[in-house]
Image (cartoon, rainbow, N blue to C red; front, side):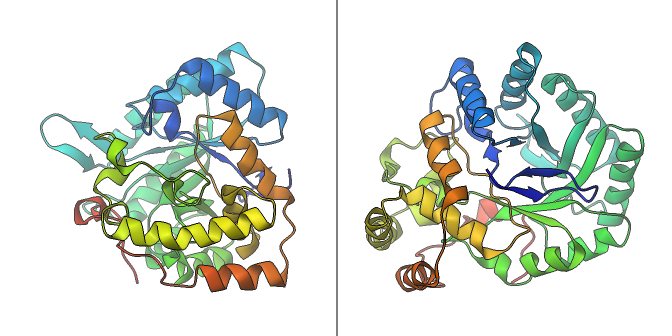
Length: 329
């Protein structure tokens, strides 16, 4: 597995990480044992970068990772997130106040069985707290040794520049793949200019850029795809029809579809480290394989022909799902 720089201090990680939302049962039933088998497989194959969050299963994902760390001598570079709250009264809300972030960070560290986390993201921006003030809070956590790196999820290039004027931002996370390319409209470029790592989540299109066609009738209530415009008809049928051509091309190359999709992401820039998610070691193997794919001009041209800019039917979020995401283009 090749490595790329994640943090400003020079910390290197595997160029492909593992998104751990699936450990919480978000996309289907799973067990802690299955998750631990996946973690062991990833580490054995050289994947050492994990991404989780406090709200993934209300702490379940972090707890599973923490239990694995407790029973092994595994050394992962771990990122987690805070800033989103859920309660029965008003559902999901965003809270970037210092006292809330500190409380959530302390809970995350306890669940992860860590004294310090390598990278701590603001999961969503709270419009009532200026980003400069949020940076001051995060810099305080860093000075205290509770976090090593600072990150933001789903922010705009202008917000990134404002934050970077206060202190070093190590990473920005946003959805990016062959079916979501909006970060190319300024965010990827701003990250490169400022020396910030860009971490694409959902780099295989929430499962659509794989060899298995998602069963939209089986989506659970908590599955973000259930109300996502791209997974609703007639958009879904149109998208599958196009993706099938991409699947056929991957097969011609003797590659799993997810492997080729991830290889494309890695090929876009050296400061990108995608974090596909799975609870399965078999799927993780396909992700890891992308690090060895040799991209050529012929492959690039064919992908651009099959999946050109703007090919997707439907917005990447519903109106409700867009809440908290900074739109900039």
